[in-house]
Structures are given as C-alpha cells and as structure tokens.
Length: 213
Image 1: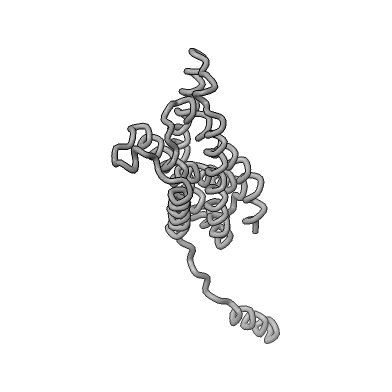
Image 2: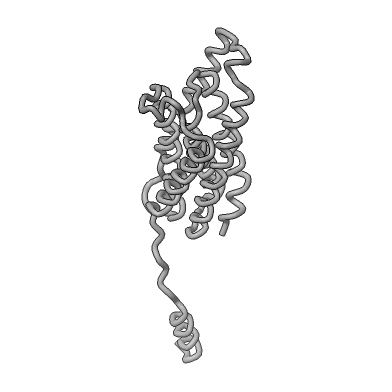
C-alpha cells in the first residue's frame, strides 16, 4: 500500500465518530408522553365524562379505551422498531390489534344493514367534534413520532408512514375518549374509525418524505 493511500485511509478513520444506538423504548416513551399530554389537554379544555368523573364509567368506555390504546401502542412499537433496520424480527402484533379494532366498524355496519340507525344515533355535530379533536391530538403525536424516526434509518418509509398514521390516529382518538360521553356502537363505529383511517392516509402520504434517507 502506498504512503498516499495509507495517509488517506488514516485521515478517514480519524474523522469517524461513534454513533449512539437508537433505542425503540425511547420512541415509545415519546408516543406515550404525547398521548398523556393530549389527554390532559382534552380534560382541561373539554372536561371528562361524567360517569368517569364519578368513578363509575360505563363498560364500553373501558373496552373502547383498551382497544384504541392497544392498537396505538402496537403500531407505535412496530414503527419505532423500523428505526433500526435489520435488528430483531418483523413485528406483526399490530396486525392483530388492527383486526380487533375493526370489530367496532364491522359490527356497526352489520347492525346498520339489519336496522338503519336514525340520524340521532350518529350525532353529526358531536361526531365532528370527536373527529376534529382526535385529529389535532393525532397531529401532535404523529409529529413527535416522525421527528424521533428521523434519528434512525427506516428502510421502509412507506410502511413507517402507515404505522405512524395508524398509531397517532388511535392514540389521538384515545385522548378524546376520556371526554366522549356516547357509548352506542353506531357512533363509535363511525366517529372513532374516521380519525384512525384519515390519520393512516395522511401518514402514508407525508411521513415517508420526512424520514427518507
């Protein structure tokens, strides 16, 4: 090896710096922290459900909360793991969480085919509030997750976009859920599905452009 080549190699080696390993748990903490912040903001601005405030929340509240949080955290976990390409196995738990969450809109559709729900059951005015607040919360959560992913090296930006979108939509809806006083399946199947679906589409269109490397 010539002295020139050796000198060039030594110069490149001297410029190398150790890279801090990115930890998926940090990404989950970001998602969790932003979700709690969104919940606190909803509680401050709108209040909480009356039955929840009295410590006697309806069973549907806990079921809806559990499914939204399960879907949000499962997809967030899959998304943050994409920041470390080639490390670990591909996470597919979020698919089962999504299948479970889809029972709400599927049940609502089946019941609608059997007995068309009145407009009052859909509550358009309150539903638009649900959609707006859920999407605002999802924007904050999704922005935080996207900024965190930019620290890593996702090899599938498109998949990351879907996952970030679904996660932020579900967690944003979970934040609004502490205020939402309605428990009927028609309302839940429509107005708690729309923010997840809309956020997923926005995530797929926007996030890949921001994290591509």
